[in-house]
Length: 101
Image 1 (cartoon, rainbow, N blue to C red):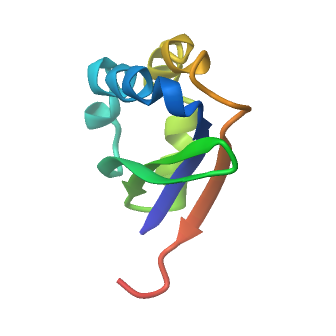
Image 2: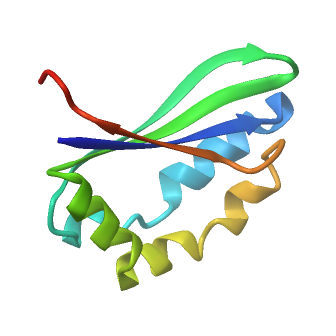
């Protein structure tokens, strides 16, 4: 199992817009081989930013990597402008290999 997470620092006054953009976007993930699940996580507010993470679970890292090169990935990320104005900097990607599951 592989978990892919993007960490976001969001302007606290724009969290409603950020969450709505995620709620209404088309992810195209259901059509991708190896995709298991998605969650948007809201964290604490620190240093003037509300923390969020997008969390996707994949069968394996190869499935995730194949998605990043797919048409589904391009279509999903073409909608990124909806969240960009809420961010306090670029997202930070972290990939995780499951050790115990």
